[in-house]
Length: 121
Image 1 (cartoon, one colour):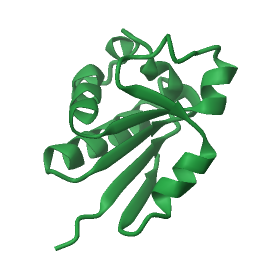
Image 2 (image 1 turned 30 degrees about the vertical axis):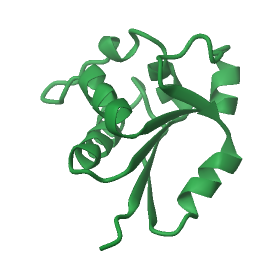
Image 3 (image 1 turned 180 degrees about the vertical axis):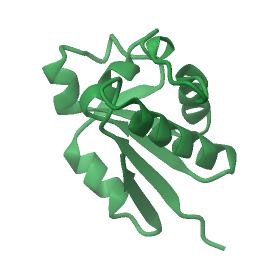
């Protein structure tokens, strides 16, 4: 049986907390189930690539964002959008260990790979 890779792009942060939480929850749940997961931080979610920023996010009745992010990093990959990072003056030296910075070409490569499923929140 071929396993599909789940590529989740989250575009929301504190500006749309429910959408943000949904993306992290789906990615972490898939990772916990053994699904290969790639989470992309874009737009306002870019800030969660920085140490401590996920801990500032709160949403009632939602799993803590730091726990979800840690689960995804442990079992999958987390990528910060190159342009989103540049617009926020975030450099590779600033991000949490394990977070890479990459651009659209890498995203397109991931979502067009055989057996990939992309979700955008």
